[in-house]
Image (cartoon, rainbow, N blue to C red):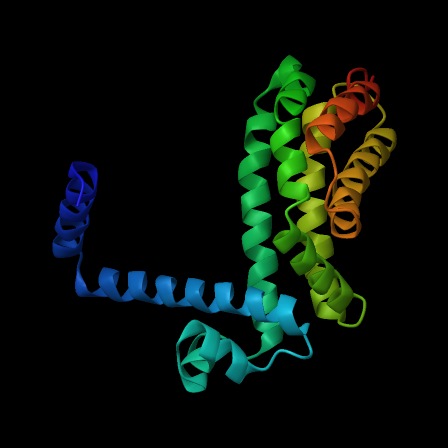
Length: 214
């Protein structure tokens, strides 16, 4: 065990000792929910949303099916939690752009390589395709996706508005999002994409779309 690992282990032990029973139970619940969600993601990608069974998810999570139902009543509820968690991640990312002011476009350019990498992650691309496909059949899932998308996009529009045309900025954002999501699909079809070059080329698109929105 390295010195760093020993320190981290000591810190964890100290925190565990300081936790109340209620806090410990809550922490354990969060950990189990995360295990279930991670297992469900793997199963949805491997078997599709409808092909994956709760028993399969339970096996992947190393839990009993009854334990799974203690946390999630259905696969639909699991997907709903995935959508919520993804939306929360996006909201955290949006905060830095909300506070960017005149550096909004510069910040977008600086983050392009990481955005291209995350957009072309094969695991995430496959999962989003499954969730989006389910949204075409399930109005509840569709509503969740739209609500999350609308909230995040509204915050980006507000950061960009500054006297510009709201509808046009909205459509500019749609073009950029379509490009990023499309890269995920293209990477499945063509896994040899030159991501570094794509990020370079996308810089020009970002400049055209967002440098002057007034």
